[in-house]
Image (cartoon, rainbow, N blue to C red; front, top):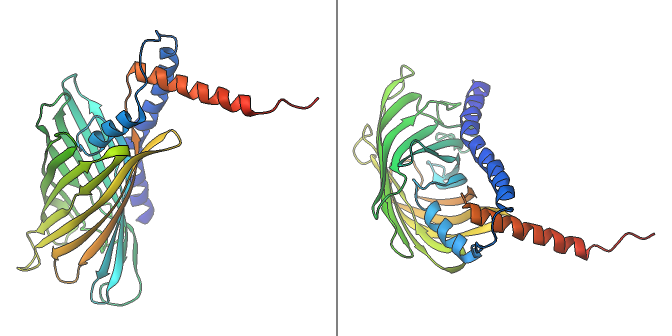
Length: 319
C-alpha cells in the first residue's frame, strides 16, 4: 500500500513539475535565438526582477511556474506535548487555455510525521491525502485578480492516522488586489466526501487562508498567511482552528535559480482539543519566471560575459 500510494503521488507531482523543466529548456533555446536579434533592449535590473517576482509569487493565480517545499512543524501536539511535522510538496503549473484564460494547477502532497496521540513515543511517517486545486483565471486581470474552480482531496495517505480515507470535492475561490508594495487577498474552499473507505468518518470541512504581504527593497517582504479551518462534523468547541501570526521572506537567487524563502510563526487562538497550540512554517520555493525575448537575450549576454571573465582569469597552461 505504501509503495503504490508513493508511486501515485510521485507520478502526479512529476506530471506537474516536468513542464517547468520543459519551459526551462525552451527558454534556453529562446535565449540562443534572441542573441542574434537587435541590440536595443535593456537588461532588467536585479531590483526590478525581485519586485516583479514578489508580486507574482504572492499571487496564487499568477502565470508563474513554481515548486514550493513548505515544512510545517506543529508543537505541543496531543496530551504528551509531542511534535507533528508536515512537509508539503506543492507545485504550481499555469496553462494557457486561450490567450484570455489561464488554468492554474495547484497540487499539495503532504509527507507527514504523525505521533501516536495515546502514547509518548512512536508514530507514523508517510504520505497524507493529496489536495489538487484547479483555478480558471483571466490571463490579463484588472485591479481585482480572481480565480475559481474545483478542489479535491484524494485518499493517497499511507496510514489511517495520516489521512481521512475519503475522496472529497468542493468549490474553491481566490481573490486579491496588489496596490503598490502590497498583496492582500484570500483563498477559500469547502469540500465534502463523495466516496471512500467504509467505516471512516464523512468529510465536510472548510478552509480559509487570508494573506497580507508588504514588499520592501532587495526582495525582502513581511508576510502573514494563516490558514483557518473548520471541521463541520466535529463536536461543539472542536470545530475551528484559528491561527494568528506571520514572518518574513525574501526573493533571491541561488546561482542563476530564483527562489523564495520565508519563515513564519503562528499561535492558534482557537483549536480543537488534542491538537497543536502553535506552529512554525519554513518554505523554500523554486521559481521559473517567464522572460521576454529581449530579457532572455540580455541574460544570455550576461552569462557569456561572466564566462569570458572567468576564462581570462585562468592562467595559460605551462609548456
